[in-house]
Length: 457
Image (cartoon, rainbow, N blue to C red; front, top):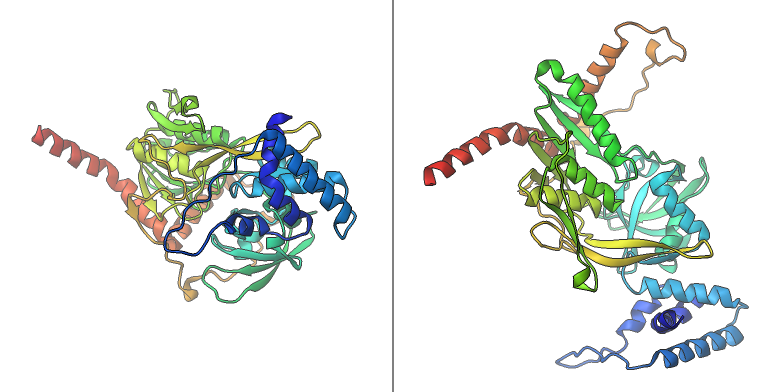
């Protein structure tokens, strides 16, 4: 209990703000010690004992409980204090009540309903990190960097990050109204999005011709590595008659991350040795290092990795490991820059904490926190021109009818359709086109480099 009371002292200002419904007040309170003058000095830390801190918290709690304009229970006030305390630490630490904790678990292990966006709290604003592919938010046009101003009329700044998540989620088929300020707009736009089941399939593949494959990872959930290995195995079988897989474009664009162990295992799929990532907490002696190990199903074909500003967390671990190990060429735009590690800590009453406990470092020892992964080859995405965008058409064929009679050529036709989808994507995605060109060139570049090294020696 003594350890907990020490933390409560940090939450006193947040307690008052959260209880009175003043979101963002904790940030303002943190700035009060600043004074005008030529030189700004950091305010000295208050020297207070754990006992005095606990007493002060108890006094404030009693004052608010007896004098606040609304009748609030002690439990509500303490929950508000805990939320305010964690909100004041960093954008990713948060307190979750029992329902919120259950929702968080469902995002990585079970089906859940919502609109399909990964969000973060930046400078008091709710920012879209990335929309998840093939979800209502993705189809509604939400983009990385968009700011969510309100949910169903309530200002987002009045809510904690977890409360925003809970309000955006809801039963399948219901609608949520979001006021969104797009990153390239000056005025907000109101968007009504119908909630749906969020797909948990995290790996998609499409052939690009001649043994080259586009492998798209949309998130890092519990089955991502398993799905990845299944997809690569299927691709190897498909291309067996033509010499097997010749190259892979691993697409991590707009992948918001997920589970650390899956990031490590995905990296390990393409590495046979060496460091993948290291994690350092407050005590540097507790550093933990994750390394690759040789496996029978290691994939060693040439690789290009695509990233952009929506590639965060676990995506950056994979991109950083493959870059530092000289295993893949990184192409695209600088990634999001979330280099912190959160532990999920369950509490006895069914609630939980998501607490930042460490920073992670790429194999060469660099932290990407707030910096991101800088691509080896920077290629800005160019959206298709207006006249090139596909016009949605509904075409009904016999194969689309339920209980249609199967044809012996069906399997071959489906394979051709998948191949055509890859070509269609190439036609409208300049980063993917450049990635394909580079992955085809990597063996020749390596050959030239090896010859040059031999001449120097």
